[in-house]
Length: 276
Image (cartoon, rainbow, N blue to C red; front, top):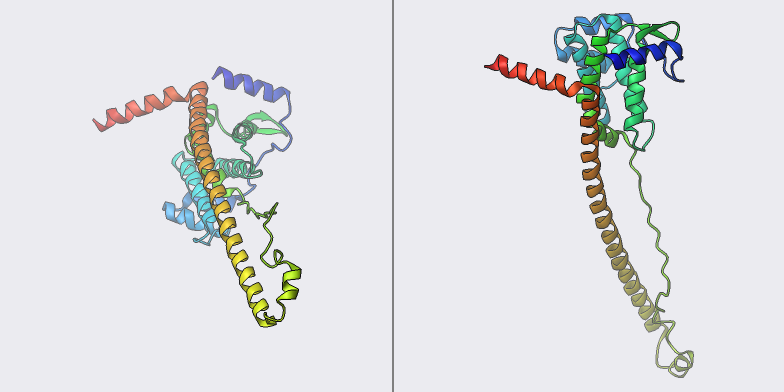
């Protein structure tokens, strides 16, 4: 709590960073927020969001992921009984954080988390016109824990799904390529035996040589590509495994440093007690 108070004090003294501003009604206007708050079921919320943001292509993987993210963000806001102002602001905070994450193909977990925290502070500290005191300290803590335990815990997966795929065009230049059979023929021998070899036989021989060379080149190229791809796939698997491990350790460290780990243990104990 002391740490958040210090941050709030600094926020009063220094204006927010460039790009951080109040996002109330940015993506959901009052009527849309009220409709989402009054929806009877989560499926109704999903339908309304799909209409608002035109996420109707169920076969598109990215649209399906976005719709799921938006739906469960609204589910959290409804479970917390947020007002339409808080509902709209929290939805925009999550949406803007995700867009900040996908602005670059490079890893930016720390930067995205800092951006998310700045947006929360912008809506929890009274410092007009830079920020508004919309959320309480307790709500900020709960929203932070919720985002860390959901979005940032699966940050790598979101990053992978929304990173543009890069297509590699492979061009090979052969050095020291063996001469064709036609180049090895001695012109003097050809002249002496020219009467015995017809033009038709020479054309057929040249055609067979060219076909053989093309087939050998294709096999050689295919072998090189397969070896390179297998090596790259192996490296990517090892890299993804290592980065996922580092990401989970980083998230757990953030949970511990922010004091959420103890809250989580307490909630688990309470759940076990209720089950008994």
